[in-house]
Each structure stands twice: as C-alpha cells, then as structure tokens.
Image 1: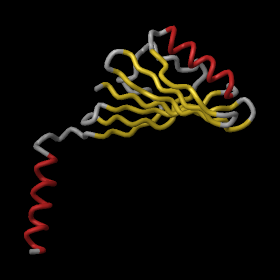
Image 2 (image 1 turned 120 degrees about the horizontal axis):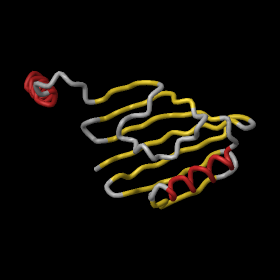
Image 3 (image 1 turned 90 degrees about the horizontal axis):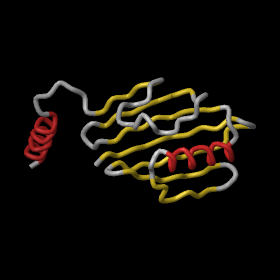
Image 4 (image 1 turned 180 degrees about the vertical axis):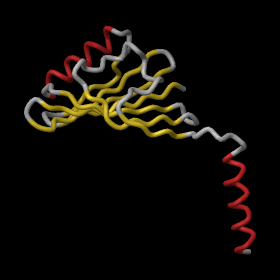
Length: 130
C-alpha cells in the first residue's frame, strides 16, 4: 500500500512538471516584474528589492524601500493609483503599517506598507492578472 501511494505521488509530481524547461516561479531582485503596469505609481526614489513572478498563477510581486515617511507614501500611492485609473477598494492601517487593495480591468493587487524609521518606508506590491 505504501509503495502504491509513493508511486502515485511520483506520477503526480512528474505530470505536474510537464515537459517544459521554463521555470514557473522566478525570483529576482532590483527590477520591477513585467506584469506591473508601467503607470503603477512607484516612488521615484524607490530602491527595488526582492521580486517574484509566478507564471502559473499569474502573480507578480516586488518589494521597495523609499526615503519617504509612511503618511506621505500612503497619500502619494493612493493619489497615483487613482490618477492611473485604478480603483482603490480598501485603504486602512495605523501609524506603523498600512494596506491598500486596488484593481483595474482584470488586474487586482495590494500594497503592504510599513514605516521602518524616520522618513524611511517599505512597500510590498502584489498583483494578479486573472
């Protein structure tokens, strides 16, 4: 019985891999993933950190840091999203962290923001183009 379960698991794993040599999840650093719209309001002084592209689930993520305090970052991102035609569905948080969710067409996403120190903030952007 145990051998049958192991063989079945092995078969599923091989079938899931298919015959494509292209990775389905790609990690990177320093470059905004292509799925992020060109007009997404990334702060001009943002330093892009870790990135992730999941081609199977059509999700992309990137992290950034900016020399902007959290309150100003929230205002700039909120206005920038609306100016770029996004609908902001949720905007909530406190003085240390903030969350925004947005959509435009088939693209849905979120931004998690947090204050790191005086006038330095971090953001994590996630989008799904379903």
